[in-house]
Image (cartoon, rainbow, N blue to C red; front, side, top):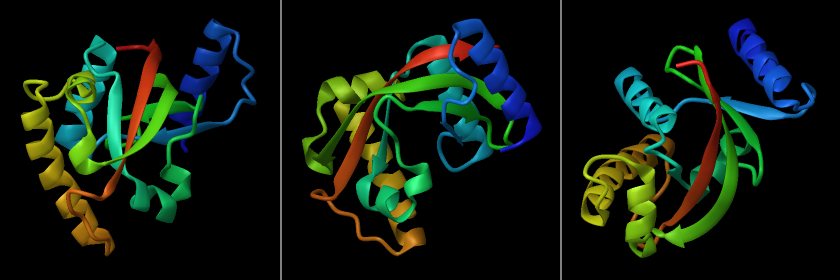
Amino acid sequence: MNELVNQFWLEFCEKSSINSETPYQVWFFGNSEEMSKELAGLVVSGKKTATASLVEFNEKHPEAAPIDDGYSVVTDFNGNPLCVIQTTEIRHLPFDEVDAQFAFDEGEGDQTLADWREGHWAYFTKEAAETGLEFNEKTLVCCERFKLLYSKI
């Protein structure tokens, strides 16, 4: 966490009457500067209200795992705060059981299930290989829904 994030959190808390001691996570979407900017932009525009991650990755990195009703300061790839979201739902499903509504709510690409599967297959395959995990159609995916609470964009 950096001072910019801390100040952003305090501004959010002041404007929303949230106790500034409330725990929160800090993270960015994706695995590149371009992706983090694009996906955060979709959140701020209201198009993206869901995200997916590998359950096994979250188990190995509990600090990054979504928390039910938890708050997150979403940053860009360089740690600059962009918005505050709150997790509203967490479901664990095999990759091949993620449905069209969830794919649409992720707000990416053309928002179809086919596009979601293609993009996330590539992303999760790469992530799994880089972190020593296995990935296939039955791998559990953490399907997280959230709401945008605050943004300065």
